[in-house]
Amino acid sequence: MFRRFSIIMIVSFCIMIVGITGCTPSSAPEVTGKDEATKRVTVAITQDLKGDKIDATTYNGARAVQTAIYDALVEFGEGGKIEPSLAESWDVAKDGKTYTFHLRKDVLFSDGTAFNSAAVKFSLERTVANEETASLEIARKLEKIETPDEYTVVLTFKEMASQTLLELSQARPFRIMSPNAVVPNGAIGGEFTEPIGTGPWKLDSYKEGQDTVLVANEHYWKEAVANYSLVFKVITDPQARVLALQNGEIDMAGGEVGNIPYENIALFENNDKYTIETNASTMSYFVVINQSNELLADKNIRQAINYGTDTSKMMSGKGAEVSGLFQSTVAFVTSDNQPSYEYNVDKAKQLIEASGYQLNASSKLYEKDGQVIKFRLVIQTEEYPEWKEMAEIFQDQMKDIGVKVDILNQERAAYYDALWTNKQYDLLLYRTYTDAQLPYRFLSSLFYNTLETPAVAYQDDILTAELDQIANTISQSEQQAIFDRVFDRIHEEAMTVPIYYTKQTFIHNSKISDFTFGNIEDNPVKWHQLHIGDK
Image (cartoon, rainbow, N blue to C red; front, side):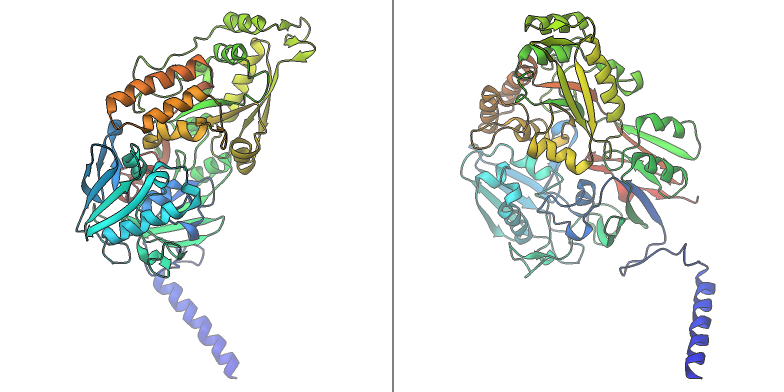
């Protein structure tokens, strides 16, 4: 009797709740935190965000989520200008060894605690203690951090640290996190428990392999906060992202966050249901050359590949003319310091023949001593779906100069293993970094070469020596002269094959307005400034 009565009461209660809310179980928004949002913006993302491990002092999680939750001391502005953020101002000693930051006094973390010099000291010391950051200049050269008062931080380095401001402005790992984010509280080696930052968003929930939900940080100091939640939904397959945008499963896709294949963009053009947003980029696509392959150790062959590549045919024949490795939007790039190889099939063949190869009349491929010029080109399309078409165009162009190219499209993890670890490639389609990481940080991470740590990409001692000189001056004019030589060296030795200059492209449904690109590509959209209308 009691059991029957209980069941009736439970059913009656459920009916009452559904009647009050007017929502069916399938349409009701899932709320796992205390902040209930009435509206959602759902954005496609290519990989799991590791939402339970978004530690500002690590490389965990997507950069777009790191920048949504955490602020930097300084920001990377237009044209590479460093601008104030959590630090209102700063002073740099003439010898480049001491940086003094004067902090804002009106900032709170998302848990309501005060942002101050102790939090900055905690964050930076925790980052430096992380072995993953050992290659960064701040981590290598930092001697001590002092906090003379609650809103002043002094960084002292063992030697000149010319990249400090640029590294501090990046998406990670030097953004500022509350000491309350770890246990024990404020312990440099403490266990990370939750992301607590000063940015416009805070973590609400996370489902591994499915989605990460952010809600507005009501304590955000800079601008008005959002009245909706932000959902990053994991969709690894590019075509699935297209379908999800079409059927309303997501509201937005694009950029590095969740790229839409170039060939599918036309589906959303001239359609009132969607808006396409484009913006300039600092990123380039290029081919990494593995010089451990004896054929690619030959400069003539590397130059021939460059002469044989017609970049104007990329992206369905709509590719912009590519001059050098870096776009004009990158710091230290000028109209005079990005030399290029003009497309010239005959010149490519002449260089190949100069190295003793002969064209086989039957196969139409160059060979020497029975060895055909053949390379394996490694790509991945989870993050960059357009690379498939680019690789196929490149393959056809190499065939025109008598070079055989086989394409291997790998899963994302295997692709990065090939680049960073096992070197199982001859050629590999890759992309430059963006914003403050260009050009020095990018070049150092791929091309800096020592006996103890060989360069990831092309190995050249002259280039490494030039990179050392850049690190030893804070003079912009001196750095410019060195970068001019660096760019020329990369071109002359044909260390890469530039392929394409990207643009930032996002597509969203028409219920979203007030879309604004972020100040850096790792913070691609000002997510908190969107306006959500009715569907």
